Amino acid sequence: MKTINVCPGTLAPGFNTYSPLCLHKVFGGKKVNHILDFSIEDSREDIIASMNKISISGAQEKISAVIKKGKIILTPDGESGRYIIKPIPDYKHLRFRNNIPANEHLTMQIANQIYKINTAANALVLFADGHPAYITKRFDYKTDGSKIKQDDFASIAGKTERNGGKDFKYSGSYEDIAKLLRQNVSAWQVEIVKFFTLVVFNYLFSNGDAHLKNFSLQETNDGDYILAPAYDLMNTSIHINDGDFALQDGLIPKSEYSDVYSKTLHPCKDDFKSFGTRIGVPLKKLSSIIEMFATEQPKVYEFIENSFLEKKIKRIYKQSYIERLHRFQRSDR
Image (cartoon, rainbow, N blue to C red; front, top):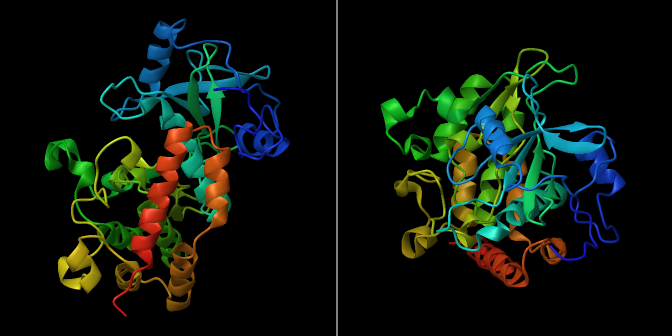
């Protein structure tokens, strides 16, 4: 990264480190530096140990971290991490992999700030050697340090690698997730709207990895369940060749496709209307959400410009949004 002139958290211009708003949202008001005291190479053994405390899923390593004395450090032995750091993946086959942390950060900020989607608090950090990484605050802990019960939809569906093969988290459809949500959430009418909004967002911003494990339910203090904050949002089409949807059975049954979908093999807003109606989104809410996503949002371009993506990747990201927006805006009617 070159000279910083926007907040590496909120992407607000006029800052050379984290803004007060970012410090409040991500770091509980503690003043921390966006530059870490260590690099991946210098701390390889400690980082590997820290990574094992969480897991290594897919192509992205995850490092456990905490804040001590105003510094972001690796989680010491015997402690529970409160942050996850995701560095540049080591997998060389990923296109433009150096941009992956900035891509996830930008996509999460667009979701939260422009489309008002509840997301995990997040920012960018720099290792001591200058390499960027994505940092996100864990949302599965209460303020008193106790763990919040949380299950992703692969677990809720009872799907594992043993009974579903290595691609188990990509099986089923988004309608299947909606059915499980309705079965497990007492106030499902509220949460189904959030879920629908997130599915449309993932399509519009080319997140082709929105699989079963990337949606979760969390237990509330009252013992009910709600949709967990959104996480792992990214324009995956920049880095890999993927389809419109992560799940193998897609959005809706083929028999319900619009003519546009059947002819072009890409959904339009009519298909999302069908999907929303089928899963129980109230008509008024459904129309307003479709209208919001079908309307070009100039702020998206501002955020892309303020992001930490390389210039070329900014152009690709912008073009991807424009292309999906135009596809989405089409209609049979």
